[in-house]
Length: 112
Length: 113
Image 1: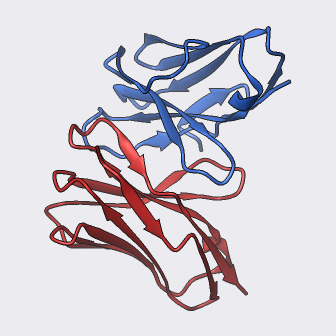
Image 2 (image 1 turned 45 degrees about the vertical axis):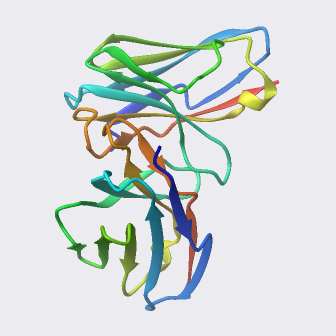
């Protein structure tokens, strides 16, 4: 079955810097990759997603890139702000499209 | 606004109690999910309902019993839980089950005494 690895587990950046979180997946048939943000004590919220027919997608300060050959996908946050501090989970849908397999999470700290 | 509503927000119960968690969505989604989340861990899938039928049971112990009375409601019945079952229980929904983003509720924080 699908396995998702996520790095780093913790990331600390200065306000205004960029943050990059990287994930790898194992099942080459997976074709949907969402990213969720979870603030302390709150629910996970979808922030961006990408499908396998697209190499990059941007939404304001957030971008996701996908390299299907290498089975890598990454989240890029530019001009980070303190409110970006949260845990970020990458995920991949399994081959059948029924199950979301989450990475272990990255705790992002943005220092003001 | 939270589009997926879960009740109660907090629940403390003893190991012999029976209780239920409730989840409701009015987005017309046809897939609903239960997840268990321990501190500092990702959500862990428990059950998936697709068009009101149980599609996936991730080998969850029988002390957890899901129910989907209609396309908007999802329940999780709890009985004879163990202390290690203490966690945040998240409900989610999606348009259908195939490669769609999930919308999560705020969760029920469950403590087993």
